[in-house]
Structure formats: C-alpha cells, structure tokens
Length: 121
Image (cartoon, rainbow, N blue to C red; front, side, top):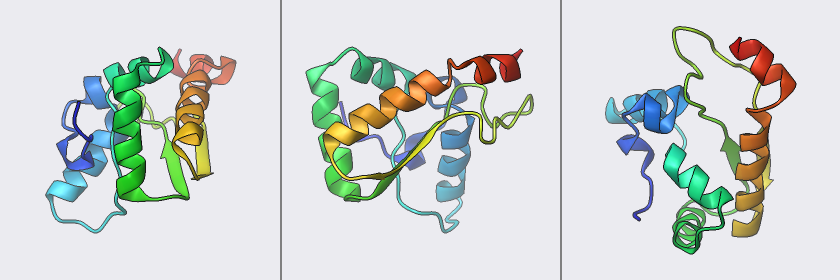
C-alpha cells in the first residue's frame, strides 16, 4: 500500500464525494489544507486490524503531523443526492496513530447511525 494522496482521490465509489471534490480542488491548484484520503477498502482493512494498513496510517500520520482532523467521505456524501453536512462524525485533535484508528472507527460507526440511515432514506 502507498500513502493515499488526496490529489489521487478521483473515484467517488472508492473514496466518497468529499475526498474526490478535495482532490479536484488540489489538482486545480486551489489552496486547501494538506490531507490524505483512504479508500473504502483501506477503511475496511483498518477496521479488520490489517497490519499493512496500520503501516500506511503511520506514514499518513508522520507526513501530516499531530492534531489531525479525521473526517468522513462516505460514498454518496456530498453528491447531487445530498450533502450529509453534520450527519457523520468528525474527530478533531488526533494526536497518534492509535487515535487515528479509533477516529476511523467512530466515523465508520456514525455512517451507520439511526440519523445517517434516515437521511440516506
């Protein structure tokens, strides 16, 4: 696995709408904060405890530094069908790889909350 550069997020089915739109902004040389995008497969690997993806997250954390904001980019989010603004969790001030793993789990769970399911319907 390679470090997931945000500018490489092009497929909304793999990365979600928010990451793809941020990737487009980067490719257009618009000023946005540095970041990374995890694919759906990478998130599933994090949740399964995959060691290789832990190495990937350590690279991401090392390149971006502490006090990260972990945000959702769920497939279907920020699309023509809905914005999902405020529906999924955001975890601020992530200061370690372990906290990043926990943040990813919190965000994943928030996409399966009663409110998120109702919004999607």
